[in-house]
Image 1 (tube, one colour):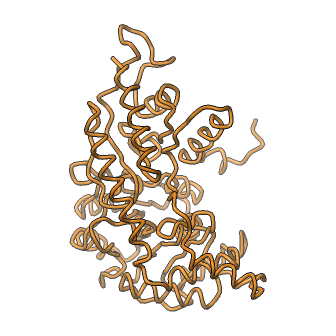
Image 2 (cartoon, rainbow, N blue to C red; image 1 turned 135 degrees about the horizontal axis):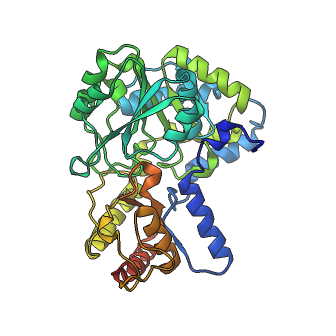
Length: 404
């Protein structure tokens, strides 16, 4: 009998973290692994942001802060939401957390009781389902077709809503597909939600500035639902600040207060120095992110070209973030060498098997699509150099060619 709680045994380890760990273990053994599993920009934090952190140290910003963050930071976040997203929040509606993941967990725990339903478009970010499980909610999955850039429609949401529905959660730009909802598409979703006053929305916009098509639209700016939207963002992706661990939300005042209450009992505020760096990040002109976004666009185009050279891989054209989510069922039922032989111990049955094979045979770490709700796919992160991407795809192509 396990001494661990059912709360822990009922959730899964993050597959992105697990694959990154496996990649590090192999590298430590001297294996030349190319890691395309983790969603982390390979750029340095901008100097102006690092200087703000150094100044904070020199000026002794080293004490506990308000649980929801320094007032100056929360005011800066509120201005950022107005400037970039046309969202109106006051400082007491902003909660700064130790990463956007904690912001999402705070919001779900604040809203969901056992048995409450949460609508989750598929594919979804890897942690949504397990956060819902922690809150003892029930995830209701709604499939987004690749032909529609993996996005769901208002008609699908309308059909999925029941008297138990409490929340809808999605990301745009999306991890793992790179899909971005347009203003018209968000209005369609809002129209489906508007007539259900007990249904709230978590809009995860952490990849906001890595958008290759223009401005990222926020469903919270649509009047019919704006009072029921919790907007999640942070500094990790756009400003290459993953290790700084700063995320934030803008939310209705009662939800923000509840999230502050939860956070006060678990972590209190995030690092005071990181907060001052984040204040600078959200206050400077967003054009500082343009060079990195342009690099990611160039890498996307390269990866799409490289993918097109490999038989059987089908994909959409990502509009943002830094992931490709190809469909790989062409290789199901195949094995290395064919004729009943197994591919390094297995016949490929799904995306999970294919990722295991590619790690073993090609020494390239990827993430199975099952982690995002669809095991006919795999996720490829192109948050690394063009040289490594080219090398990785050559290895992938050579390994896949052995499957018959």
